[in-house]
Amino acid sequence: MNRLRVATVITRFEAGAGIVALRGAQALDPAAYRTTIVTGQGDRLLRLAAESGIEVVVEPALRSPIAPVDDLLALRRLTRLFARREFDVVHTHSAKAGILGRLAAHRTGVQRVVHTFHGLPYHEFQSAARRGAYIGIERRVGRLTDVALCVGSAVSVEVVRRGLVPPERVRTIGVPVELDAPARTPAARIRARDALGLAGRGHVVGAVGRLAYQKNPEAFVRALIALGRSDVTGVWIGGGELTRSVRELITSERAPVILAGERSDVPDLLPAFDVFALPSRYEGLPVAVVEAMACGIPVVATAVNSVPDVVVPGRTGLLVPPQRPDLLARAVGHLLDHPREADRLAAEARSLIGDGFSGKALGEELAAAYHPEPI
Image (tube, rainbow, N blue to C red):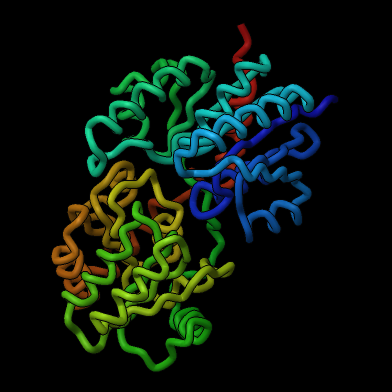
């Protein structure tokens, strides 16, 4: 049997979107699919892909910022790559790769074009002109899309509402997490805190994500300042372009926050947290939140996009508005002061995270998306 040749195109092969792309490729039967990951940059996930036997092609011109010269170069190179390799499926992730990859696939007559919306390239914190331009571009490339996989129901609803892709082509998926990751037991808590150098600390409030505008790490730092408790330490796991400015904010405000940097053992570190906080301005459905819930950690998150799919106020966690570090601090403090309620929310959240968030479930969704339905 000939294997289906799949090009998975992603701008940055890192963070949540990169994890979804990698775990999806890993979940496919290697006897039936041959996946090549095409990306502009990556680090740890590149190594993990190689260890899994997945081919990776790095295209440096594929960059996140709008850069007309590089964008045109990336489009030409992707077009040549697709024509030369004769892929059966092109599956794009993220905004930039989604636009350039789908255009290149259309130019070369690729049989099947799939795009994953991890979030949306427009949001309320942009100017109306930029937001309108993004919507217009997405509608154009949406016509070239056979299947749109949307991470979370709110993303699906917005894609349909805005007419980005014909509604019959839109499907909702979850994010794949390690369901067998360590639970938050006393022993796991001690090990995780030792690994982070937090032995002997009081309460720990944690966050995981890129230090980037979308994730709003400044709000996390300001929430820990607003909390004003000497028995609480904040820990942010992840790196990014805002590392320097966030570190300067921590130093200037003497905030009780530690930047732990990039780590490859995040699931093992999550039990160190008493509360998981997500301060994002906008999101899809973050892998880190679902992993924290699977671990049994109570969650406070911003009420954005598909986050309420899993963080249901008063049932599986607490929600606050974005850009309100004061309310984030208040919600975190409430859970720290009411451990029984925090445990109840965490237990219900953990029961919610089932097989629908497994790599196997994502693999089945991809297999369905890659093959046209029989007539």
